[in-house]
Image (cartoon, rainbow, N blue to C red; front, top):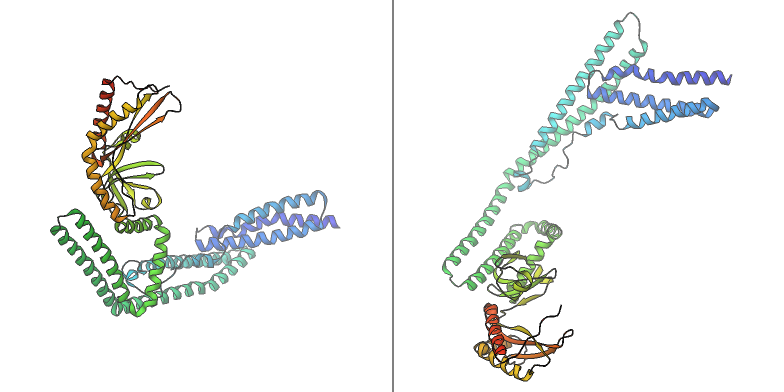
Length: 479
C-alpha cells in the first residue's frame, strides 16, 4: 500500500511543472502587470510543490527518497531565481516616488531644485502604468470570452482567468490611491511655491541685492585703492584689510538679515562650517595659515626664504601671498647650486606647509645679510697661523663694507628680540678631517642675500691665488 501511495505522489510531483505552464499565456503580451502576476502564480506553485516534496520525503525511503531530494533541490533553486523577479503590484507602484519633498520653500528650492520636473516625470510613469493595466485587463477579458466560447470546456483556464480578473480588479485601488497621493502632493507643493512667491520671495530678493551691493562696493573700493597706492607693501596690506573686512561685513549682514530666525541662521552656519571643515580641511588650514602669515610678520613679500617640504629644500623670493598659497621665485644660490641644480622656476606652496614645516628667512625684518661659508682642505704640514692671517686679511678686504651694514641692520633685529650684541667679523676654523691627514679650513663671512654666489666666487678666487702664490698646497679629496 505504501509503494502505491509513493508512486501516486511521485507522479503528481512530476506533473506539477507541466501544470505550471498552464498560466504561461499571461506573459504573451509582454505586459509588466501580466508578467508580475505570472511571477506570483509561479512562485505560489513552486511553494506548494516544495511543501509537497518535503512531506513526501518524510514518508518515503531508499532510492525514491533520493530522487525526491534531488527534485527538491532543483525546485528550491528555481524558487531562488524567481524570487529575484517582481511578484507584487506594490513593488511596481513603489517606483513612482517623489523622494523627500521639501516642507519649507526657500530661495534655492524656488530657483534651482524645483520639483515640477519630478512631478511631470512621475505622472508620465504613472500614466504608462495605468495604460498597461487597462491593456492587461482587456487581454484577460478577451481570453476569458474565447475560453467560454470554446466547444471543449477548459475549466482550469477558465478558473485561472476569472481569478486573475478578480485579482486585477482588487488591485485597481492601488493605482487610484497612488494617483490621488501624487495629485495631492503636487497641489500642496504648487500652493507652497505660489505662497512663497507672493510673500517670501520679494524679501529674499532684497536680501540678495543688499549682499551683491556690499560685494560690489568692496570691489570698487579695492579698485580705487589699487589705482592710488604706489607702494607695493602698503598696497598688499590695504588689500588684505579690505578682503578681511568685506568677508566679516557680509557675514554680519547675513546674520542681521536673519535676526528674526536666529536659531535657523545659527544652525545653518554651524552645518555649513562643519561640512566645510570636513570636505575642505586643507583649504581651511591654508586660510588659517594665511592669517598667520599675514599678521605674524615672520615672512612678507620680497623676503628670501627656504622651507623644508618632505625633507626637500625649496628656496626663493616671496613674490605673492594669497589666501591659499605662497608664490616663490627660485633664485640662484648655494642651495639651488648644490642640491637642486636648477633655478628660475615659479614655486607654489600651500599655506598650511608654513605651519607644519621649518621656514628659514634670509631677510627677516631689516636683516639683508647672512653668514656664508667657504671650505678648503689644507695639509697638516702647512703653516696654519700664516694661512689664518692671509685668509683673514683677504676676507676683511672683500666683506668689510658688508660687516658695517650688517651691524646696523642687526640693531633693528635686537629691538624686536632679546639678543646679545654680536661682531660680524670673519670666523676662521681649522677642523681635522676624519679620513685624510689634513685640515678642513672653514671661512665664515657675512654676505648680502642677493650676492651670495658672486661674493663666494670672488672670495674663493682671491684666497686660492694668494695661497698658491705663498707656496701653500691644498689636499686632494681621497677616493
